[in-house]
Length: 309
Image 1 (spheres, rainbow, N blue to C red):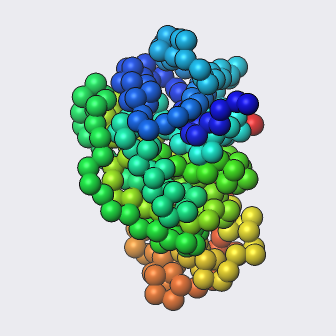
Image 2 (cartoon, one colour; image 1 turned 180 degrees about the vertical axis):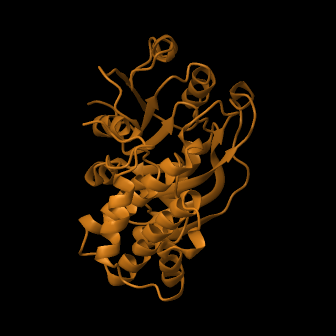
């Protein structure tokens, strides 16, 4: 009988040859695991990223390297990996994320103690070279358990690749929403629809090395993807309770207001500002006409990337 896989690590890869030796060193050094698997999904890197992964995984078991014929985008590639995962838990990472060596083990321990099916930690931008971070471990931390995963996600900050999620939950949710290019906002929202409980740890479970460049520099992209994550969750799930729908509508309007504030000549005079204030004060139900207006504005942007069909 085959040994059960305890954790599936799913990594999206795109032109990160500088980071990968350190990232993989920390990944393969994760403590306390019995039988992990490693799934690498490349989005047509133009450097030696895939060669480095092949060299560093030679002779290892439970390794899958997925190459693709054309570039498609982050959300689509993370979903390829999620679909292949066979572990009890799935932990995702970008190819420039470094995990403290004991972080996965301690996240599983918190999951076992609380029964939560989503475990999130924090991340920190270290400003250090990746080679300086490969031997790091977690410092003392606290955590908070929320039995209602969706309300927990809506009341906190759950972004970037700081999560450990029960694989069955993640696969049932369908992974990331491919109507948003970057997966950070959509994965916690979609998984929380099906998860039993969520935990937020105070620990920095992801260490971000000195950055050469990433999509977080495109603030309009972030506004667009945040909007789309909440917009489509609201549209796809009319059965959600009223208080959650009000909260999601507030997040949608907030994302739109942040976009208008960056792009309009007189944003404080715009209807977006007054809608934003209204959501802060009255917390209204969604105005469908205004939802459609915001969606149309974001959909017409040519400065953001979208998942290729």
